[in-house]
Image (cartoon, rainbow, N blue to C red):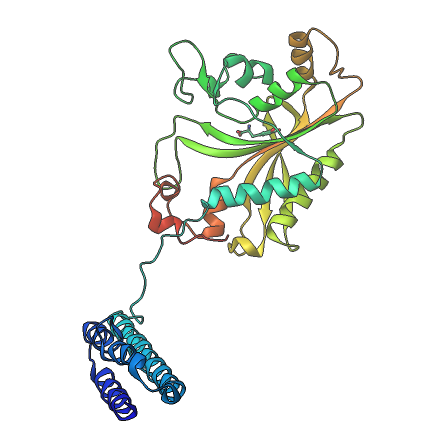
Amino acid sequence: MDQQLEQIRTEALAVIAAADDETAVETARVKYLGRAGSVSLLSEGMKSLPKEDKPRIGKLLNEVRTAVAEALDARKSALEAERDSKALSQIDISLPGTPAAVGSLHPITQLLDRAIQVFRRMGFALADGPDIETEWHCFDALNTPADHPARNEQDTFYLPDGRLLRTQTSTVQVRTMEAMPPPVRIIAPGGVYRRDEVDATHLAQFTQIEGLYVDENVTLGDLKGTIEFFFRELLGNDVQVRMRPHFFPFTEPSFEIDIKAAALGRGDKWLELAGCGMVDPAVFEEINRKRGDNAYDPEKFTGFAFGFGLDRLAMILCGVPDIRLLIENDSRFLAQYAAL
Ligand code: DAH
């Protein structure tokens, strides 16, 4: 019996080593360890052995059974590993993946975010107003005479009911003062609309930021300091700011603001960017009339206001040659301005 067992062990290990797929391994398992397999049959034969042989043969039998079982397991794992690595070798890990399209913020949005951050540091809160406005909010309350050319249908989009698309964010000055007494310190970014012929430098819709600060003792010095600080933060310490006397109906005195800065890349040329001035007492009086109180007492309060367009500034900072690119939403254009 010892001999038989050794023979089975040798044969089984050779058969298992030669098994070249999982079916062959299973066949070998049945042949040697199955219920009618040779190892099992020999262990049946144990019963008829003389008593003194039983422990030795029993031990050998266990050894053979364990050796065969381990060989089967090892072969099975080896075949599995081989199959896995073959499957993996079909995958070309050097192939580039499918790129995900990463979006970026529109240049105007980026500029707006930066502008808001700077004004926040100076204590300006964000204010808002509708794009569709009444004539009173857009013109009358802002001391704009009835025959002012801006009201002309040539310049302003009117709705059939007499309302209009706001031509300036200055409307939010009016809405803010209607809603709250002084002090107010707000900025109001948003879209404005004019009947301009659309070309490389004009759109019928563009973006402005409005500012308003009303309190006791607000001076022209405060206005100048605010404007200078803002543009220095936005464009760098070399910024030069020039204020030229101008006319706006709702401020007196009024100025246009020109900027010169290396960041604008225009050499020695000034860029006309904004309008500003000290709030005209006539505006406070109209607001008081509407409010039905004297909250904006012109004897007690003064204020400054400013407004500027963002489109031209964004175009210069981004090197955009045609303003229409800003509204076409072409992702090839937008993808170039991940960070201004
Ligand atoms: N609303 C003016 C415009 O669209 C810009 C402006 C000028 C705003 C003077 C102001 C201001 O607040 O004080 O041209």
